[in-house]
Length: 163
Image (tube, rainbow, N blue to C red; front, side, top):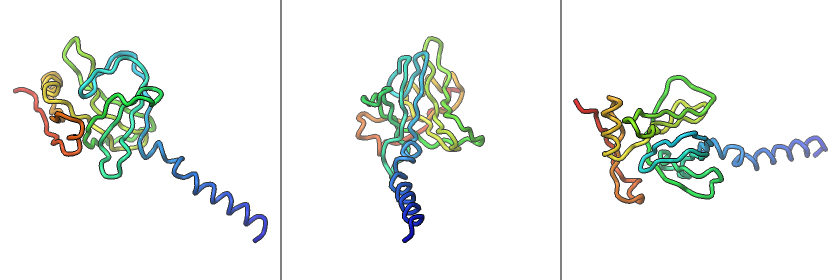
């Protein structure tokens, strides 16, 4: 094998060996975001600060979202979501929010990773979903579970606004 062939093989091997690391953020959709005021996520309120969103490392369920602190040393919460879709692609992260009753922080509705037309819409406990539905006049994904280990089998329904 000539010298050029050895160099090409070495470069090819380097690219193949590093491929899992290059796509790590795309696989788990790791997204760093900063908020300047509190926001509500299912089951808690996040104070102003820097956070990391990621999909749980699972090949079978791509709708379990984890929120970490800025250094990713502490898992703050795990949230069950359902698929959401948008027609217009964007090269930027998109976080959408539900309007909330006066005096309550906005509730995180959905998260779209840059370049994806599919994202994650968050399911809220029924009591919060009722409040959101009453203000937004839209159905709100609802999940009821008592323990986090029930997440994989929990049923997602929809809370509709009052008539």
